[in-house]
Structures are given as structure tokens and as C-alpha cells.
Amino acid sequence: MATHSLTVRLATPADAAVLADLGCRAFVAKFGHLYRPEDLAAFLDVSHTEQKLHAELTDPGMVTAVVEDGAGRLLAFCKLLLESSLPRVTDAARPLELKQLYGDPDVLGQGLGARLMDWALDEARRRRADEVQLSVWSENPGAQRFYGRYGFVKVGEVDFMVGEQRDEDWLFALKL
Image 1 (cartoon, rainbow, N blue to C red):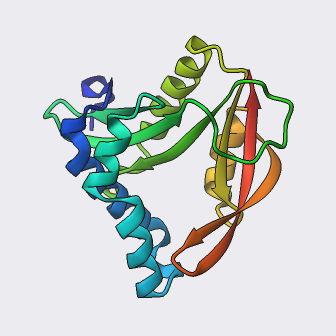
Image 2 (image 1 turned 90 degrees about the vertical axis):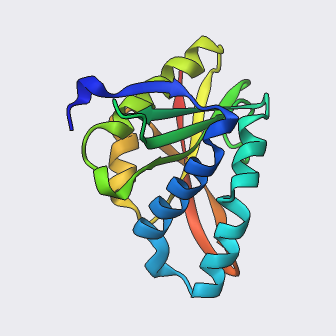
């Protein structure tokens, strides 16, 4: 795939169904094997539905960007929650939260995450945030290395529920 034909743009409510599908496929491809089917189904039914995505895409407190190819296919997305919902463990006064930096499982490793991370950090600075926060699964060293390349550091821990299963996520933060 030629990266010059890729566009980063803001998502619209019309993207809700495609983003719900993309989010489900990305989560299941990376993490689906870790969970009982009923826990996975319960999680997806709450977190990756067209209705949930539509509500987020119309929420003024969240902004979502997508990477789209020249044919108009959405390949990756990330969300910025303009007021972090994560536990306050730093002295940040205006933290933003990066949520669900997800890519199509068929096109991983092609720089889509980096394009979205660059967008997210630019957007956070534009909005005068003093910190970007995120949570990452404690047993996902690849994602931890990716965030570490941008200067994110571990600042705490938080539980992440998938159905009835409790996972340990690490809180990462980047001072801006």
C-alpha cells in the first residue's frame, strides 16, 4: 500500500458502522483468544457497537481521526477524549486521553499507528492539553514500546474489564 494515498481525517457520524466493525475486528484479532466467548461478546456488545460509535462521534467531548486509503476504505482510527477519564495520578491540569488506537488487522505494520499518533499529539497541543494519557494492557509489550518511542511513561495501573474478566492495564502519560 502506498502511504502517499493515505489521508488522515476527522471521522463523522456516517463512519459509525465501519468504525464499529473495524474496532471489533481489531480487538478480536489482537486479544480475542484471551477471553471466554461470553466475556468477549459482552465487551463487544458494549464497546464496539454502531450505536456507541455514533454517540461518540456526535459527542463534543471526543474527537476521532481515521486513516483512509485512496479508495475511501477506513484502515485505522484513534479517539481523543478531551477530558481524560483515567484516574488522576499525575499533576496534569488539562490531560487528554488517547483511546483505541486501532488498525485493520490486515494492514498492520504500515505506519498507520504512527500517522494517528502524530495527529493525536498535534491535536492535544492545539487544544492546549498539558498531558496525553492512555491505558495499555500490562502484557502488551509491543504497544508499550510504540508508546515509549513517543516519550510516554508508566505512571500507574488500572483495571480493565472484559465481561467478567479483570485485566491489569498500565496508565501511560506524556507531558506536553
